[in-house]
Amino acid sequence: MQSTGERSDIRLLANRIRALEDVAKKISNNLNQYLESSKGRLYIVYSRLGYLPANILYWIISTMTPENDVRLLDAMSYSYYVVAYTEPSTIVFFTTDPGSNITLNILQAARLMGNEILMVSTRPQNDILADTLAPYDKIYVDLQDEIETSIAMGIAAFNTGIKIYKGLGRRHERLDTHMKEGFHPVTAELIEKYSDVIDSIANAMDIVVTSSKMLEPSAYLISEALRRRGIRSRYEPLEYVAGPGDVLIISSTVEEHYMKEKIFKLRFMRAKIRQIVFNTDPLETNIYASIIGLYIARKR
Image (cartoon, rainbow, N blue to C red):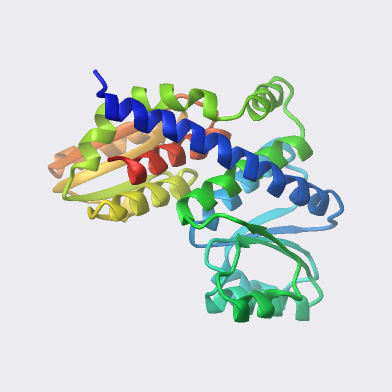
């Protein structure tokens, strides 16, 4: 049974998700215009927790409209290994770290090579950085918290993807309905469903967070949320996780058979496994998982 404080936390979280959805609408309105006018190959590039929106947008495009030529790359790989060796393309760059060297590097390199690039980013907190970034096309997110910024971008990427890249009949219709309803109405149900696991990991001392590749961005975010609570946490790809120790696995029901094999091996290595399994469309699972991450970060 939930305490009064926990019920209050969940209510505040639902209100916060609703506010983030309002921010996401503003982002997606501008992002829609950019992508609707784009031509040729699309590179979706990311740094830090910009991985969440980049991943969501990539998988929606790849799944809904596989005829589109779209690539997903981290900012360092794109900046050093791709941009100088390809024909001019369209780029969307998601970042929660506009002050990093790689941000300016990718913007300068993309423009030099004749690419169209739009940066979706946290607003810079100093005038010098803002002036440096002023010449480039951008959408700034006016949020101070990195996890909240990532979630707002993620919801915006989901909304844009579902609105522009239509396909797969009933599946698209169902996701379109969820887009219009928003994620805040299911926040309480989501937290209540996984409350036992959340309480367990929120009080851990040291825990490895892992997942399949598709859910990697939200698993990274959850690990970041745990570190904010003073817990020694890190993300490791599932293929490389070993016991003994505490392991949190983020997964979806479509990965059930794959996960059974991995869990068996981890238990053999004396790992203590906690698992959050989502029975949702994989194209929106990262958002649900990231909401849990935000709850963990805010939990009293």
